[in-house]
Image (cartoon, rainbow, N blue to C red; front, side, top):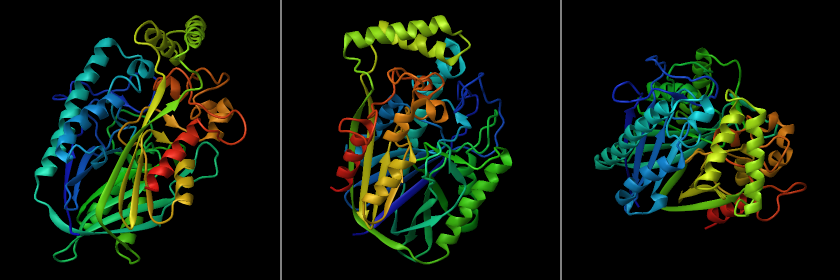
Length: 455
């Protein structure tokens, strides 16, 4: 069955105007806004793959995260263009921490940087510009003439990071899917992936696509084609120090050169149509059932105490304000939504998980699922960390509980952890001892993922 493809790259690096806001995301602390400085441009790239049964669309963006409401807005406008099949549309964020703040919910710009209502309104206006640009990019790519291609998959290795949570998994796999024109076998496009936080630049006010952008430039310059980066399960994967603009180039060159070397050598597996897609939304529980009025009262008392014990200059104070506003208004969320998605091709499974998924999930899935498996994360929406049971059990004993979401009280969001910044009222549910039990985060995610991959 023939496959055809079209690809389009958009330099969406924000400028004022038309962007109302140049606030940056990825790090908390003092307000951080871009003032026109750009190192490596920010790309949004769309690839359309048509197997004769209608188009399948991947949209990858140099941005730190996309909250749920932004994902749903983009998806609702794209779905009619892909036969209204959720599985046919996939978004991946590179997770660069040197891009714009998109969305005003999770992460929360007030909690993260103590921004004013006017600043937050400007971010919302920028978000609307962003949504429009992304939908237009998809529309334009779908409207392009498509080139008939053959697809090929291969894996390599590169070492540019470490496990910052002290876990044994250090993901070094480099995934690559290339397209060659059927007419002359010439290289058409390179898709590549790796799992590592895109924070090698460090904190400053310069827009930069970080090492994924540097690697993309190396590949495109060497091979003369568009290259697209897809982030992996990098929730606990950190780039090798020291953070600096030069490290962006150093690590990107290592990764890019590995992909170029892979393309210029053999050992590729043919990837064939048809393409079958699947999409499912999981509901992950918290350690507290906020459907219980007594639990809400306990949370209200705990967050009221935080207001008394902290000052407005602290994250914990601002997070407590947001939680109390939710309790007084719409109520606390009762579940943590988590979309998962699969593209099944002959010779390759692409599996995409939303949020900042920790490496243990990717390692376990690759051990359990036979054949070629490319695990992507930061897919569709990113509203927090999804850790495996061991990290959730450890809480504040590992990296002050950042990836676990709690410090000394497993029923309360930990001060200065991900559940504060995103923000959520409590950490995700786990087994207090032993392996993950049914109904806990790890079991729900692994059971659903393996079930989807075995369809």
